[in-house]
Image 1 (cartoon, one colour):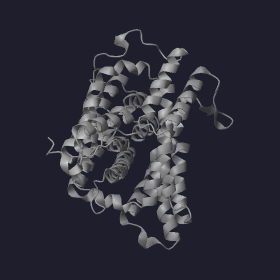
Image 2 (cartoon, rainbow, N blue to C red):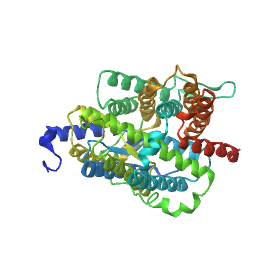
Image 3 (spheres, rainbow, N blue to C red):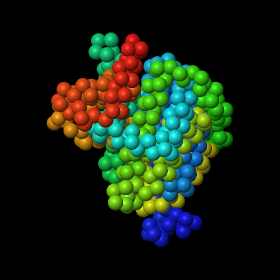
Length: 434
């Protein structure tokens, strides 16, 4: 095993890799509780989604570790789950089963595009400024959802939105959790988001805001049945042939594209895996990620993608795929802690959503704001996601304005032909949507 994972070449060992794998798991364990909460809003069974989340993360991460040999973990992506629930199901009125079929198709297409090498071509066709705008916009959208779930932001007939009752128990608990999580992450605690949730839940129990476990059975239990979600995507493949679903599938693909590419480059650079500015075994890594989405859709969860929290494990010394193997085993063990779902309420998970939004907003700094023809489409992409409560709408508006502003500026030659195709698709999308 040492030879297979190249321990000597990477200057690592079993102890270091195990610590790194556990560290990565703790840094992203919040998804086990946040993802079921988000997808429950789409009408999905919370227990089944918990099981699907853990299994998708375990299987996808195992494939990444064994096949691609990267210290990168996978799980249902934040942002993609929000798009699934709040845009596709609640916004478009599409059944969650059909939405899962869209996730499955997007994953299969990504596998095909990866094997043929076309995926890299499409990634390169989207300008960096728009890639960063999409990431930052999703961050703002996720944070907005977190603020709503916490009760910090509420609907208002006079001003559309307003601040909630910040002196109420549930809101105070969420604010407390946010402050604790900020302190932990500021102090450099790698699993700060996860620990913040634990501390918030405990304080919530003390002040009767969170149910208190009465015995071991409220903490450890049997694995929830996956039957309510398993295989439902196959039964609704015939429902995907609509314009709405075309946009949905394209959005799933697009976000997964750049989540994965950005994460792999970031983590590989941190781990010193990059060679001459290129990712070794890039095809295997991308195929592993795409396979994770297919597996997750079959099990019953939104798109599975590579997690930037993997950098926590790399920071702890992880260098080989064995780090991912250890993380995968941790997700399998987590299957037996489903009773904790009753303890992890919206007020406990809301700080995690807000903080993830903060972390994603860092991409704002990479946008060329001093160039107006670039700033306009980037701004609309970012702004319209939270304002329209739709990731797809934000992407569509930004991608429509991009060729308009670039052509007007005399930079038409810099626009890739694929961007014109996307322009046409999104214009048609708005026409038919109306």
